[in-house]
Length: 225
Image (cartoon, rainbow, N blue to C red; front, top):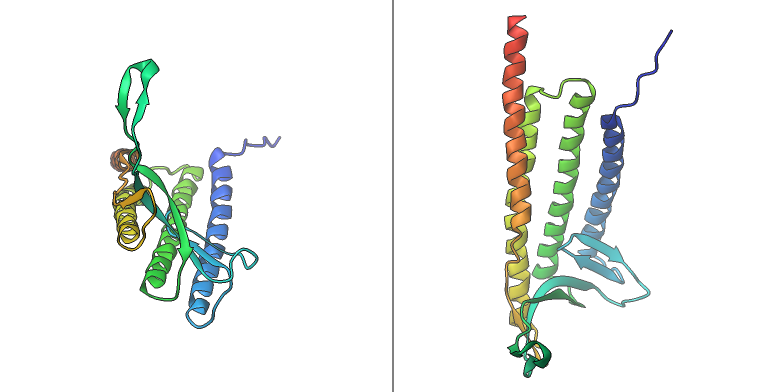
């Protein structure tokens, strides 16, 4: 009598990551193709956003190219108070938002295009590494020697990626503060650093160390048998 084994959750996650990988790979190829084509031809309605990474072509909405960058603004406001709470003065500060503006072919466009390609490529790489880890789990070999290294690499990419993202946001903020003006608003530059993202990377480093110890114990056990 054949007993049908229940399907492992790892199999579902592997299939899900495969779908993600294919989708991201298609987006990456299309992005590279469009950005390469845009160097030689004007693509009507090309829209680009680096943080978070995205791009699109909307010929009905725009006659030219547009770019969206993160901004930080301060408001030149009058007196703000809450008499019912006994607060005589309050301030609005650190407002975050996005600024979309027409852009021409040049260093700003090319630089942001390369960052966009890099960001999509990193997502594809992380999905590939996670899928490889899950495959060893499905095969009953979670403590394969390569898993600790894979998880460790993902952890460092998460940590370094957050510093890179904060630096990009700061540079985009600085660009807006240097080139744009708005009545009643003052553009400022902030890094918008996320402690939570760094904590996630540290947790992954801890998990990588657990896998490394588990691999060592598994190897020792196999030698004693």
